[in-house]
Image (cartoon, rainbow, N blue to C red):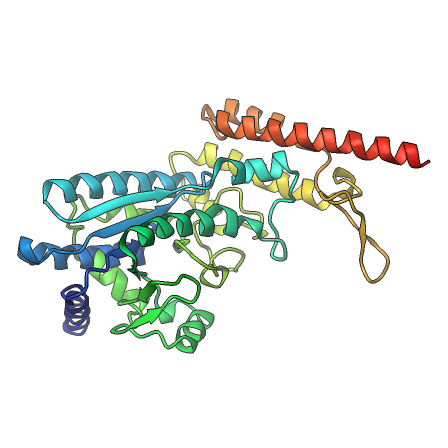
Length: 376
């Protein structure tokens, strides 16, 4: 490793150790997505803990990841495998590390919202997915940890060099690699971004020239990036922290993501000749089908979910959710896709939640029509 990079990494390790050894007992929460930045962050935290004598490992480190249930297959497979190894190795090494994977509530998943409630697949202006599938599940877990510990420190792998907008946001908040910042939305939670000043090449140099302390190699991670040309879609707690969804950068994310016009990371993986390219091609085609259905106003109700109609300033109609017929069609197509790839894409719990929403919507619509009939 080049001398300059080695010195920077030693300095970061020192900052991490200094913060961990402070005399308070606030636990650490490491935001882990399985991507390069969060992997390096966890690696440095792990190495710091391993070097400490057991009696000084006083604070628990919670490694928290997020599964939206519609993650890119390659990414979620890597995440689940790495979390399992991290959990078992930490346990055998007697390190105070606990792992958690958050998931959206069953009535707030992608399919329950699109097929059940008829929500339009997300757009830049109607990006309902981040809140329901990423932010809320993670905030619920952090809320439980805060209820137990009163305070906590959230460690993130965000870096200023990721983008101009990221640098602007971090500078605006006064984020520095060696200081804590209060979290803007969660009382009792402070933020710590020790990798803030690293460049992309610094991260890759460390990962390529080292092995994860929990075992194995970084080969799978490096291959994932090489094939897709993607960046990680981070664990987020606010919409401002989620620039990866809907930008032009080729980031890993949900295979159903319709915020972007073209999923360049998925396409890159397919074009690289990935062993599951046929499956990924089918998933990609279904994503584009969802986008096409969204753009056809004929597939949507003329009233919104609250039963009211709305018009724009120019007098044009604002259409509501998918019609019930279209929701049933999307579910049938999803089942066809499951049969094609030989894999489940929607759970029994989600289908039950969808049927419950449908029953309530149909009952409400019957009541609305009956009322209109009486008025007429």
